[in-house]
Image (cartoon, rainbow, N blue to C red; front, side, top):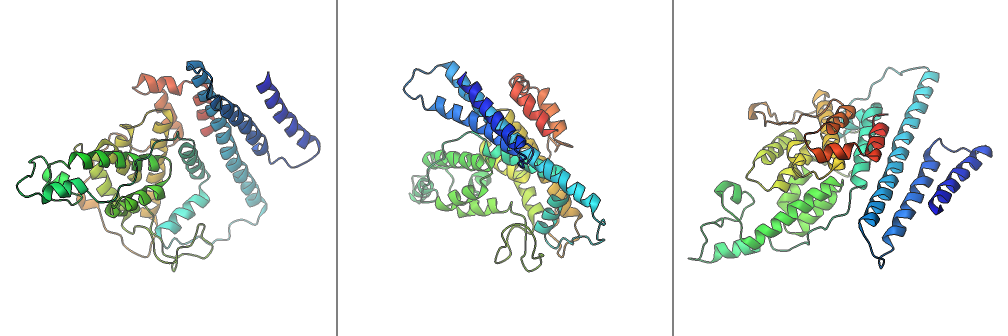
Length: 376
């Protein structure tokens, strides 16, 4: 009865605001209050550290975490929809379009212009952020100084080279020579690329880049930075959203970089999480699906690919002030999963997936509720 009373108090508080004629901003304050009640219940369960804990306790924690996340989703999307409705009403009352269209001078400007005029894409971006910020915690690998220390030591030992170990210590040596790193380096590298993927899965690309630099793998940090959209503060309008960089930033040849990522991800000789890392950054689904553990992971992979496809198309269709490197002559990297038409198609596909576990997860009440909220 305690939890019932807490939710009832949240309802009464909201009703009191409405009765007093206060602006309640539609659903936002009430959903936040409900989410707070669910979070408090979750924290109370986690705080019972010394109590005997069984499956029932774990199920209760999962329940309240999912409920808290669901209220978070409601608040995020309905706030966007309320804003879109208000803007549409303002447009109806205005004199109409000024007749001037924004000219996209850089990739970043083109993408920002797309975000500003597409309410649906803004919702997809918010769903992606929601999936990233509500992802479970993970154990990151520790930083380690000294690039391929044990492999370089093995190479340096004259007459003691293992035929299985690479004879050169550059980043491409393993794929070029089809040999291995020293066992200690191979173990750390596997942990590193998994951590990098987990950072990207949680929307923390900057953390992934920092980890590469701190672990003396600046070359890998550079490959991750290839995902950044190109911008030039001199060419962009002064009112463009986001922090204005002091100089040019991002990747002017992002399409070429994505082609290289796709080729790396499709190579089955590479580490599974390394393939998933570059697949996620370039908007591929195939290799990300290999490491997805649940409904949330699969939905994130698809919404990420959907957004990337729309961004790519926008940049390609924009009349920009430069010509990026062409990729047509490089051939197509095959892909089993193509980006979906919309999230409704994705959710339907997950509900009838080949995996029984994924179909079961999609049928859970909270997942069905979240799906209904996402597709409005």
